[in-house]
Image (cartoon, rainbow, N blue to C red; front, side):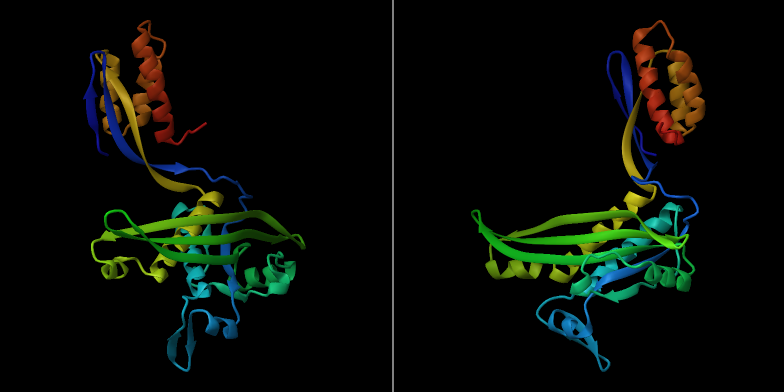
Length: 288
């Protein structure tokens, strides 16, 4: 914990950083613990040959565009990492992603019960997170502002669904569409050097796909996040003692003292203690 102190005439402010477990946006049945992954955005091999990297007879070949079908796995790997980190879900065989070809005739149509049930049973899972579709758009453009500046814009469209096959029926218990755009910029005096310094399209796609997977994981599962917070201390002896406990991260002990001060006749001490109580509650995990 890093603490910085700023003094005023009436009180001091102590800043610190901490990891907070944020709740999921959606809360699911506790019986769902083991989850498997499905990538429905894969193109058939003939289409992959036309748009990116493909593997044939022991050799990798590269076409004019990097293959979204390969990069999309990265979104699911980052999702698996964040879900496992939260301890809410267990991604079974998280190095394995069931790959289903993207058929335009069933584009964005939900999977069928038997399909999801078979995949879950084969992997020992109760539910499945599916990347339904994944499309990227990438562009480079140059602006001149007394010198050249090269800008890469990478846009990603992705759709996730969370399937739960149970009691002979299939529930889509969550679904989310993301439209994300990331920008990179390099500047320099020589035009030709800009392209050498710019992030590659492949790396840009990996970064934007990584962010996509993290976002959906944080939507469906509690997740840790770094936050900056502060609490107050003044000349009141109880406030000083509580601050000592807070500096040691003994938030419950600090809160006991601050709670006493909240009913103090000293309005400033009472107000500061009430604020500190909110911070302590968050640190203890009692967000309500």
